[in-house]
Length: 187
Image (tube, rainbow, N blue to C red; front, side, top):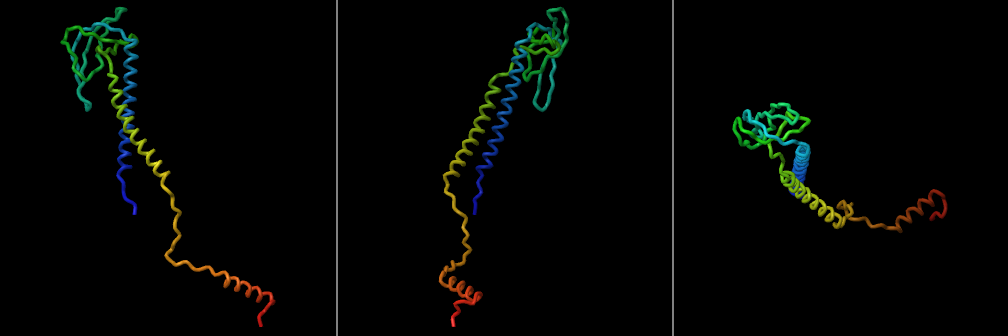
């Protein structure tokens, strides 16, 4: 009777957790690259805070400002900053530093802009750790299976073996041949 082992189920859970960690790390890395690309082309300026913005969702509260600023070519922009998880400092009428993309000045961001790189590293390390444990377990199971001697399937039915009697079998064949051919009949 085979015994039930919970280890493969645990390894399956580890694999799922590891894959989710790697996926989260990859998405955070994509966000990190997008923010770094934004920072490379962004222009820093001072903007006047017109009002505070806050919104609430399942992910939690997010905050931002409505701001007004002038681009270097003299265009007056009134826009809402992209929201962030912490409430920014400043009152209506104060000046705050913002960054904006010259191609899209209507989407400014509050400085400092960025995603900490550790938000990419931590889930990635967890993912690699869990997937690594599953890999090591699978390799150990394969090595163990390769070293285990194999047994041929038994054909034993529970009946005692019949002795093989060659002399009686031969005598039966000879007598059958003689009867069919009519030779060497015993009289």
